[in-house]
Length: 324
Ligand SMILES: Nc1ncnc2c1ncn2[C@@H]1O[C@H](COP(=O)(O)OP(=O)(O)OP(=O)(O)O)[C@@H](O)[C@H]1O
Ligand SMILES: [Mg+2]
Image (tube, helix red, strand yellow):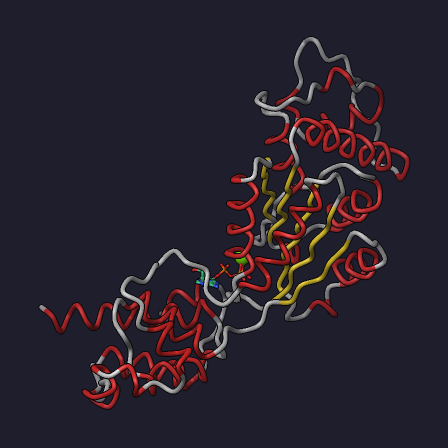
């Protein structure tokens, strides 16, 4: 578990480390009391019992996010009635932003929308506009209905500078001028055009993940689009870690600007509740974990699904090693 968290650059707390060590050394103190394991009534609430004693748990389910899923579905309703929507979804590392967006993407596809992703690259070295480059590549990959030939001029040139692989002999754009405010505006306008074209054929959901690592021009483009897409059926969903947004001037400014747009909805993910954490632990560990243990994990992880899930996975390993 600790390695999984380290890969994310997260230092597990002392209590979490001790809990992990206890699980790995199969500490008897963590064993469920026999009566608790056998008797659902031992659980604290009826709700807990009902939830935790379903016959089959799904390891693929999204736990404890029903209100957020509903809110996002409301956003999909909006784009299917020709309105643009912007969701800005914040929360700490591992809280489930990307998982929620996966759920949104699945719902959107089921309803006939097109979903494209742009992920920011945190390790450095990515070119400017990297998340948008990915979005444009997807939209202009030949499967879609966007023909760049219908859009000429300087904006198209700037666009092709981002995605040079789209150049072909039939496109006669000139080399873009050096970056200037005018050139940037043209580029933004060209991207808005591409999005509108794509959305005219099929409602469009664009997920921009890890925006805390976005370059400033990418955030400016997001702001531009949030205000300029008119009634195009486009949902822009931006995900970001909000631990230290205040130290990220570009992101703070972007959030403040987006907040002024009527189309924008902010969402902040916090830890799962105790019951949802317990259900998730049961699902991942493949067993009913004693209520006291589920509560300890919840308290220690504050319902962070990444942390709670890692512990549950340890638990599963432990159960297998006991079986063998
Ligand atoms: N509601 C949930 N139910 C079940 N599993 C979840 C839930 N939320 C998150 N997870 C799981 O927890 C882990 C972390 O979630 P996710 O990657 O979505 O976090 P994140 O907020 O995007 O983190 P980061 O800021 O590092 O990108 C993943 O394995 C994910 O599948
Ligand atoms: Mg994520």
